Length: 214
Image (cartoon, rainbow, N blue to C red; front, side, top):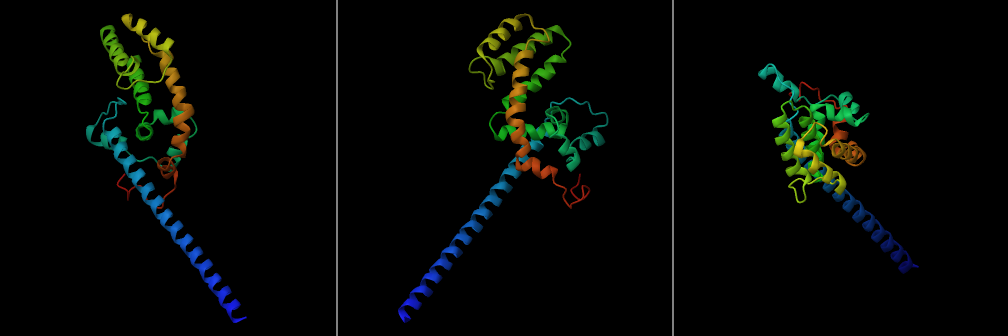
């Protein structure tokens, strides 16, 4: 009877140790996840500040001193939540656009948003000479085979662009831009909305915005 009791006690101990071991390993996993999450968010913020400072979103800033600083405000959670209502809401917001670019960079597909921005800029170009030179640059950067930032569009569209840029018009890249827009809207945009970084922007934090220096 004594040996039976001893056996049970030992079994109970080893089960407890196993549970303890599991507990410890899951705590370690959580800590590791926490560390990774912080690293991801830190990387994001570095990229984000880069895109904000080099924003090609040419909103002309009147007063350099106040204006420039004010454009880079961290949005309120309410503002950030608006971005989930429509992809256009996100693209229209300077901080949102920079955050989305930082996200695409982390997914190695930033050429999509860069192409889209280049097309937006192209459509606003007034001078015919500039239109032609910009069209060639966009073609060399994004469209031709082995282009440094080659976008994923079909062969027919690429061919059409190659013909059209000889006499560039504002609609040269329309089909390709639509294609890339829907690619981002259907793939990257939903993933962006689920990302740690976006979730963090939507959280109502107890830190006041003034305390954050924004």
